[in-house]
Image (cartoon, rainbow, N blue to C red; front, side):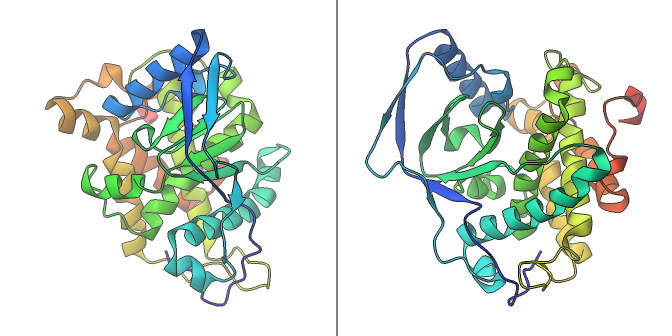
Length: 297
């Protein structure tokens, strides 16, 4: 997905942090370490199950304060720089959800969005490149080490293009919308399986990502120019390649050589692609993954 060179970015939606060292000193801190080890070896994001960050001692290195990503003023900047691409995606997502949230009957507020190198502290524990991108509900914030995009291409088999990168952000932004809806609080995500609550939540976030993409070419930037040029089917295929790459069956096949649907937590590659396309074609109001029969997932 290509930004219009002349679209205008306001700046300030995305901040970059320096490196932080964290020491687990209690029950929640230990839980955070376990969660992130699971994420490292299985690709499963369980960060939302960690508590409020108590018991974790953070030792911040110099420069760990967050500061806005620099010199992101136009779509041309977003096409040239990964940090500015994240800024442009965030501004487009924020504009989209400010309006679309009314259709879902929720009051919308923006999430925080932090880029980091190596590791950083969060209310869900210590984030690192190995954990992958994630949304932390207590912080209402998205955390992303952009080195993950190299892994997405080299280890997960995604094409790794711009829309694949922004799909990842849009998925995590979808989790923020779910937090505002009360979905995390109301859904039992403790189980596993192809129709479990955890899978339903993840597929809805995929659908929300698709809904944003479907509207992205008409969403206007600060100067009235649309953020993006018209989206091509090749670019949609780029996003679908990312959705497929992080499907439970795809991850399990690569890591162990066999697939166990009873242990799914995020959905199969086919499910993730199907719900992304549903959102893309029908919008956010079509993304009810929580009440449909398991056979419809």
